[in-house]
Structures are given as C-alpha cells and as structure tokens.
Length: 302
Image 1 (cartoon, rainbow, N blue to C red):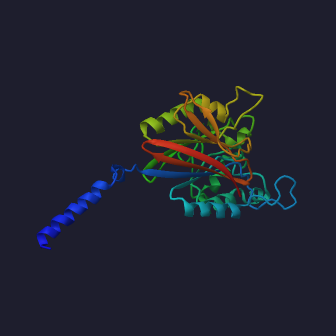
Image 2: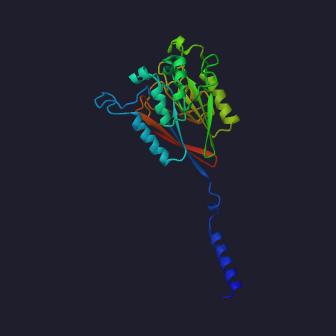
Image 3: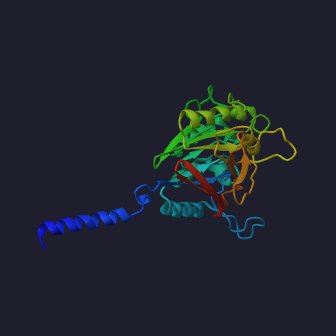
C-alpha cells in the first residue's frame, strides 16, 4: 500500500471512531461530592461508657470516633468535620483539665469548625479563652456579640471553606444564656435574636458570597413540644431561607437520619442532630451536578 493511501485510510478510520462516540462523552457534567461529619454535646466524654452502663454499654469513646473519621477521610476526597457545641462539662476530665484535653483531642481529629454551647461557658468566658491555644480549629457564633469580652474578634460569625471548587459557608447560632448560665460566667456577652441573625447570615453567604452550600451550626435545640414560641432548629428552618443544612445540638436528640423541613420559600432544609456524649457520628453526603445538589444522611454508631 502506498504511503499516501495508508495515511488517508487511517485518517478516515480515526474520524469514524471519533464520530461513533456519543456527544455526551465529551460533555459529561462534572460531579462533585462533599461529606459532612458532625457531632454535638460530647460533654467531655473521652472514654467509652462502661460495659455495664444501663443506657450506653460500651458505646462511644474518642479513640473509636477518631478511627471512624480517619476511615471516612480515606474513602472520601472532600470532608468537613463540625461540632455543634457543648464540648465541655460532663466528666472529671473537664473538672481537672478545664477543657484542655477536649480541645487537644478534637485538634488531633482535625475538626474544622465548632460553635459554642451554653456549657462551654461553665468555666467562664475567661476559662474558655484560656483553653483556645489547644484548639487548632475555629469557632463561629453569629448571634453572640462578644464586643466587650476577651473573645471579641476571635469567635467569628461565619467561616467559608472551599473544597474542590465548592464554597461552603458555615455560621453559628447559640441559645439564650440568661437563665441557663450565670451572668458572671458569660459577662458582657450579648445574645441577639437567632432568626434575625440567621436571615442576615444566610443572605450574606448565599447571595453575597455565592456559596454553593450554607450550613448553620446551631445550639438552639431541635424542638420544644410545650414551648411553640421558643426558637428551635425547626422554627429556624421554617422562618428563614437560603440555609441548606442545620446541624443541631443542646436537646440531645437522637436522629437516625436527617429531618426535612420546608423554609419560607418552600425549599427543603435538612436538620440533623446525633444525640450526645460522642456515641454517634453524623454523616451527610452532598452531590453537586449541573448546578443542582442532592443529599443523603445517616447516623453512624461510634
């Protein structure tokens, strides 16, 4: 075969192969995945419960949680690890170390972000501040105004993470401290209405910052059966918009999967809380494709 004929036939064959491929082979939409892991109300529980404990026999433990988190990080490319408050108070570890051990262990687990619960003030705002050098992660709280305290400028309203090109905006909300915490412990900390603050935060993150996902780390409580007017995660979801996920704490509510509530625009908001004492680890997987997101979640036993 002459060289010219060979080249022509080869070129024609190549064109045939390329032409036979479906157009979608060149326009496959990019799929991105994000995994959110979360805890709440761990309350200084470092060790597993005793094997004879009547409620949680041989459950929990920081070492087991760390192992589970590390395993998931090996399997998933984009992971955020969050906590919804009340890291402190509940075992002698806190009474003796004042929160140092809790923050060091969370730092070893590589937590990304945490909000403040009412028990995180149990050694006073100065006691919390004293332990911050042991925390290699940040704290967010948008409705606590720390202007005249040692936490001014340290605890921020929100933080934005970027994972595989996705922007994730996370803000924190805390419960009313008056009546739960002695005034001398939280000092000049000012509590602002969570609903009003959430409306501002979610708008800033979704509209101004163009976040692909907006998460609220809440220590408001899941729901209050006899106090319909009391602000809870369900009330928060119904009366706001632009929030995609609420990770809750305070009421020690054990959910086996996220609860779905509709917001002001009729869009779905996921709400999750995984009990207390580090017994469970929450997991929510988001998939982003063609500008749309899908999510599924479950509770993992530590």
